[in-house]
Length: 112
Image (tube, rainbow, N blue to C red; front, side, top):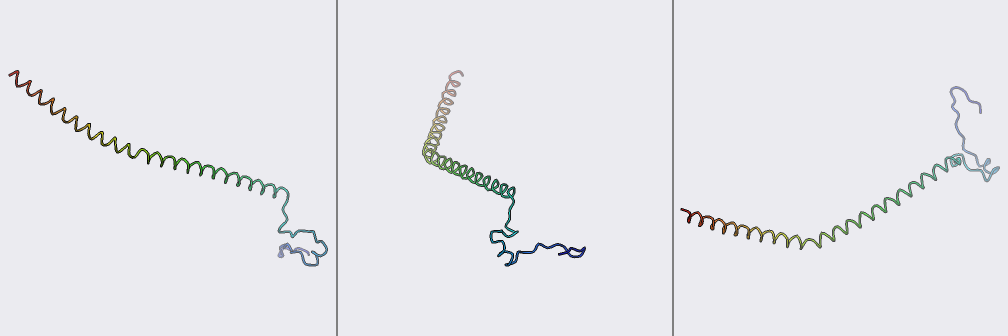
């Protein structure tokens, strides 16, 4: 096939007769060079490694989340107990303050 300025070269698909002459030949669209195949293989290996790392990271994160939820559930009652203790200590402090103020006022009354 001669190529002219107006006729671009077009890759022709192998005909059945050509395939009969060369039964082991691969079609041109499926042919990969060794470099292309190696590059593809390397990309697949990197993708597999990336998926493995991400799965491991996900598993680790899920384990940490479960542990944190367990700790939170265990500490919930302790937090409630501490809140109650703080309320109790504040009311006790207020009572002590009132008593001290009363004693100070009695001392001031004696000095007059």
